[in-house]
Amino acid sequence: MMTLTTNKLVLTLATELNGREYLKEISLAEANSAKRDGLVVVFGASDDLMEFRGAIHDEIGAYDGTEACLTSAGLVENDCDNDDCPHFKRAKKAATKIRAVWHDDGGHSWTFETDIPHATFEIVEDGSPYCRGIVFALRDLPA
Image 1 (cartoon, rainbow, N blue to C red):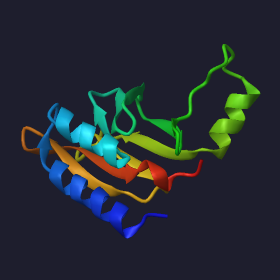
Image 2: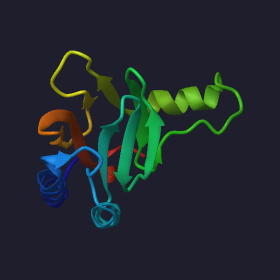
Image 3: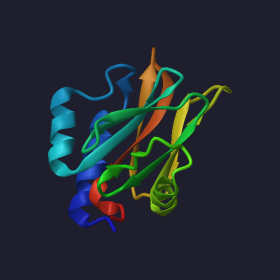
């Protein structure tokens, strides 16, 4: 679970990111600081990407939404050449999920759903809501 220190770091970073303009979501210095503190920032980009910065630096295709699987080591990836790999299926099943949700109906284009303890922040585009991102501590995920 989230400790008081982790909770404060997560909330502080989410507050700092809140209200940022699309394509200026997080600076390199902020991403490096988040990495040092074991924090992960998740936000949407364009209409097809789920971005990770901080303790995880990656992106995954998310056209029309997707689900990312994570452990305290980071994103669960398929190391097999086979999409039906039983090891990968077991790893995904045991992982904690973040669901990227794409909205075509106004409001935020991207939101994220997860059971991971997190704080949210808003990204805007030309003053209008674009994305409701999340910040969480990687150490709050199971191994």
